[in-house]
Each structure stands twice: as C-alpha cells, then as structure tokens.
Amino acid sequence: MNAKATLITIISLVGTIYGAQTLDWENYDPPSTLVVPENPIDRAKFPFIDVHSHQYRMGPSDLADRIVEMDAMNMEIMVNLSGRGGSQLKAMASNVEKAFPKRFAIFTNLNFNGVDRSNWARNAVAQLEEDVKNGAKGLKVYKGLGLSNKDIDGKRVAVDDPRLDPVWQKCGELGIPVIIHSADPQPFWEPHDNQNERWLELKIHSRRKRSDTNPAPWEQIIAEQHNMFRKHPDTNFIAAHMSWLANDLGRLSEILDEIPNMHVGIGAIIAELGRQPRMANRFFEKHQDRVLFGKDSYRPEEFPTYFRVLESNDEYFPYYKRYHAFWRMYGLNLPDDILKKLYYKNALRIIPGLDASLFPN
Image (tube, rainbow, N blue to C red; front, side, top):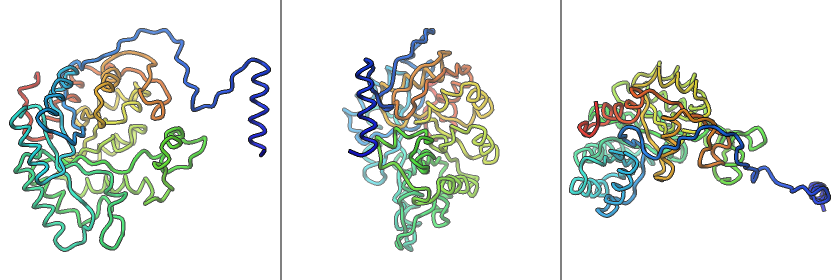
C-alpha cells in the first residue's frame, strides 16, 4: 500500500471512530441554508430571439414540436446555426417556409479544411451566395477554425488567415452576420490543479484539457478572432460565448470600444454574468446595443436560469451544471429597455429578414 492509500485509510478509520463521514470534494454540494425571496421565471418577460441554437433535424414534425416548446417560454424566433449548407440547408429552409416561415431562421456553415487549394475561396464564396439565395440568414463558424482545421500541408488554419478574407468580405457584401466560436474557456489551457477554476469539469471531461500551446496559446487564438474582426469593418461579427471574456468584462468592454462591428452572444456564459451583477449591469448599460440573447445547447428546462439571471432581483441561486459553475448567482434585474434590446431588438437589426412585426416596439 502506498503512502497516499495509507493516509486515506487512516482518515477513513478516524472518521468511522468519531462518527464522521468521509467525502471527496467532487461530491460535496450541500443545499444552501440561506432563506431569501425566490422568484423562478419559466417564461421570458418579452418575446425573444435565440440567436444560438443547434437543430440537426428540421422536418415538419420536428418544427411542430419546437413551436410548442418555444411558445411556452416566449421564444418568438429560433436561429438554427447548424444549416450545414447546400442541399441540406435548402431542405431545412423549404420545411420552414411551408410550416412556420416567421419562426425559424437558418445559418449556413463552411468547411475550412484545405483552404490553400486554388479553388477553395471561389467555391466557398459561391456556396455562400447560393445558400443565402436559398434562405440562409448568416454564417456560423465552428471552433474548429483556429483549433483543428488544417491546410493541405497539415498546418493549423488561424482564425485571421488571409486566405479566408474573401469569405468575410462576401458576408459583408451580402449583408449577413458571422457568428463565430473561437477557442474555449481559458482554464482549459492552464494546469489541471487546485488553482484551476474548471478543475471539476476537466476531471469529468478530460478530453477538454489542452496544453498551453495545443494547438496554439489561448491568447493567440482569441487575438486572431479580434484581428479578423478589425480587418473586415464592413461585416458584422457576433463573438459567441462573449469571446470567452465574460469573466473579464472590463477587458471585453475595451475591445468592443475598439471594434465597432463586433457584437457578442451570451450563450453558455450566463453563470459568469450571474456572479457579478453590479459589473454586468454596468456592462449592459454601456454596450446594450452590442449584446444578443443565445442559449447554445437547446434544452428547454435550462432557459429559466437565463431568465432568472437577466430579469429577477433574486440572490444566491444555483446554476444547473455544477461542473460549469460551483458558485451561486444573482439576478441582474435589467431594465426593460435593455432587456428588449438583448431579447430581440439587436438581433432584428443585425440578422436580415426577421419579422419585426412579431415583437413590441
């Protein structure tokens, strides 16, 4: 028996002798004894547009099921970022047009592998034009760009690779936004030790852990994203997950000041906003025209946590995934004029072809 096992055995015996139960940190999750007013919110105060959803099946029955769920939570329009492009996008758009033409919007996708092939840019631009003709309202770029996409020589394709410039330029010419997910939370690149705030998540999902240079430093990938935004001022960009800077709103605010064509979505980072209500309120006040509502993974039972953070004045309530956020959150109690911009006005301005008549002024 090694020294660690011996120590664990001794601690267990001591606990047994004194009537105590041994418990590892991963399983320690006691309910709070704090007694404060609680105001769960199952339905958003205003109709909203979810600009960050993923729907891989959009047949007639799938759409009908989604509408029931959307109506229950006051979601007026769902933006499906997984349109894929080509015939698949065309089929999705056709189903939407026949069944619920006002309630769904679809973004297309591109494959960024092999960007140095002589005809790649020309084909990508042609696909964009065809997909927009067939109903695409924007382009969604997955995190593979900057992480796993490679050219024909096996080299990483950077987010701001100049070979991609024709794509971003064409999106500007077509008047469609680009929503892009670059990198992942910064702690994924840091040592997996007791100083890592994502320790539990990395233990449960060990494949998310990266070395500090795998495949490039986190700071470099995020800088590439922002550099790409700067290079194309005539194109509207939406940085998914608030560019993974929701834990540093001061820095994100400075970047937004510098890059006027950059917007941010709040998908998957609501726990960051909920633990800093005063700072988050100041951020929303300053950048109320630059933030869009989006959930990312589509699970109707998780939306009420977003509503509660954004709308309520509640204190010290939990997130729904402890391995993402072991802390408690607070409601921002955002004013109505900011809520309306977050929920639908900003999306109506940035995403073409959405029906503004579905929403109040």
